[in-house]
Image 1 (cartoon, rainbow over the protein chains, first blue to last red):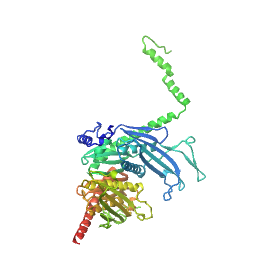
Image 2: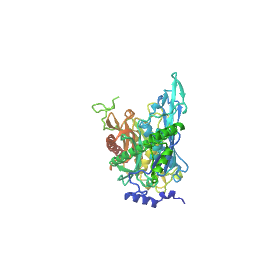
Image 3: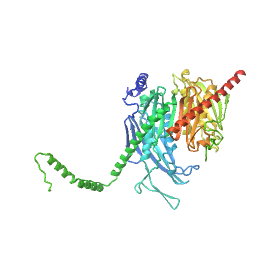
Image 4: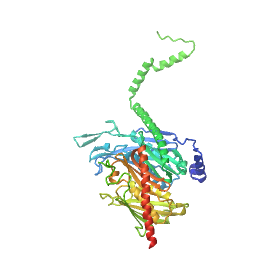
Length: 325
Length: 239
């Protein structure tokens, strides 16, 4: 009998809850820390895998050119879809997963499209005729708790990483779609970067902690989901279900959320920069790489292999090196 | 367009902290166990409650408590232009239904009715802003009409931020101005927040102002609704 359903039994739940009330989390984290987050970008633009502890989500962005809506001729489309992989969660029922899927997808939609983080007007190619329809698909590969934060981070990272094909318009209404090899693809226009932080509540809002794991989610009294950007603007906020909490505890929630949001945004921008460097290096032809290598070595004084040999001689005993001075 | 005049009057003549006129009738639908027709300004919502009844889907039955099912739909004629919303199948309606369902599941004393189900059906007949808040209020009143035991008289209210002013109970024009909207449902005696949903951008200090205005709005609405309920109960008692 595998241990995956153990967190759902009453004894285990009581243990986790009592530990939290005493100020301890079962995985020895602080109340204010996230689990280990890793953001790995794929080789194609718009593909990212985000891991938070054991929760793993893969997000992929795709786009196509479609006709706009009749009542909004200059607006593009931005759709979010969240799916569970069959192996992701063997315990939750199908209805529970449907509910989760819808709520997470709508939350990401309200944060990224509703707060105008991604400008849908910039997706217009030819008003009334052709607009971009961007679709973000999140696949939950493993549910270790806190799916909302992970899916949102994945969608945001994928959108920031994505580059759409370049489009030119000739003679006023002839649209040419350039392939990725013909012209460099173009990133999407992103106005601000909102990140979502889930704050779990316990003891009528006295205890607040971030990034609840699967076990902790089963015992908390409610979760407040806060979307915030780097300018400390709240983009989305949701608390539904679970026990009612005093209005004063929201101040603490917002403070915690704003600190964690800044950390997440820093992590995201660092990973994006790192991936940008890697892409630049990968796209450089081999002769250019060798040229830069040799140039750097000349600056250091000697070609690489000879410098190594010299160092070995110098470290050896009783050897004097004649530099030719 | 100016939504709040320099004298502090809004488009419909209200002040920033005034809610719209409320009219309510319990027992509007005879065959349902409980029902309520609620009007807040020009937003008109009809809610019906059936239950406690047998659970429709056996797989979802709980041995410890009742489950609450909620359906939320908007009539085709509810908006200024006829729009076919289907039977509440699109994402926005499903999300609203789920969030109201989660809130009501915490409001009803479900421990008293194991292995049964409450079905709440909410239809928006005219949408003029604040539909989610009015829907939640209508659902609570319908539950009261059905005689279902509740934790308290939960009341919801919406508030927003336009023209650098926090305003309560926005109508359609104010809501589509592009400012933020906060919908809050509180238990009036304790002031505890059972439901909170916020859309669009708002800085933290502004949010706290809007939120406290919304909570005050809830208490205002609660006073009015209590009067209606007492009046109706007296009327039925005297028959």
